[in-house]
Length: 225
Image 1 (cartoon, rainbow, N blue to C red):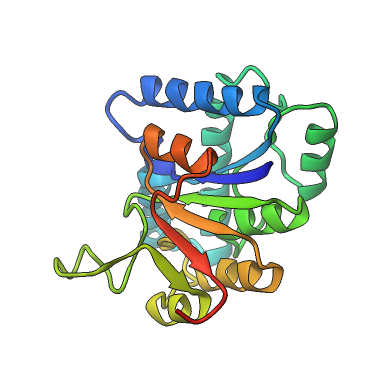
Image 2 (image 1 turned 180 degrees about the vertical axis):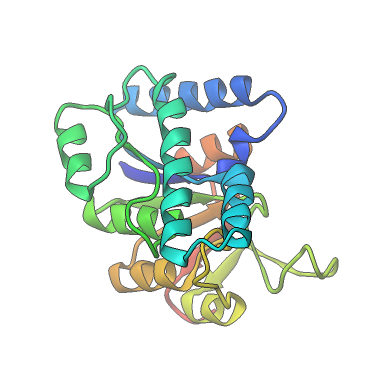
């Protein structure tokens, strides 16, 4: 099984982040030991959003803000690499580096790659490049709702969502640091490559279940529901 996992940067902001990251590292190591191939993309989290907002107030341009966000995601990626025994030793900065990592049975870990692309888009691109069997996107929301659950308490959780319906739900933004769930770029990549995609939560148990085939969260499908 070839899998790409997008990890929310929020886990690096949590109280007890050290233990959470170690738990995830253990799950990832076991998954690869079981004969699977894994690649990971790490988000920036609250720290990234705060620094981007500060930069915006100070007059930084959107491309500079993107670079700030990428820097933070790569710091988070380095932290994760430091506790995964089977990780590729460097943060990958090019999709082709993931091929090299897999060729030597290592886990490639990436943050952002280029300005204008969210880490969700990077993860989708990596899944496409590696011809992954599964793309897992872990989010604080735990899945897809018919509208923003933060704004609407009665928002309906969706166990399955068609790609066309997802496009309608997600309006996206091109501003740095504002991506929620999957943005329009990542949705487009998933659609063109027909990548099996599961949007799940950030809990270690949820991610583990998703890796081993349980539908915990929202499955994106390509036919009308």
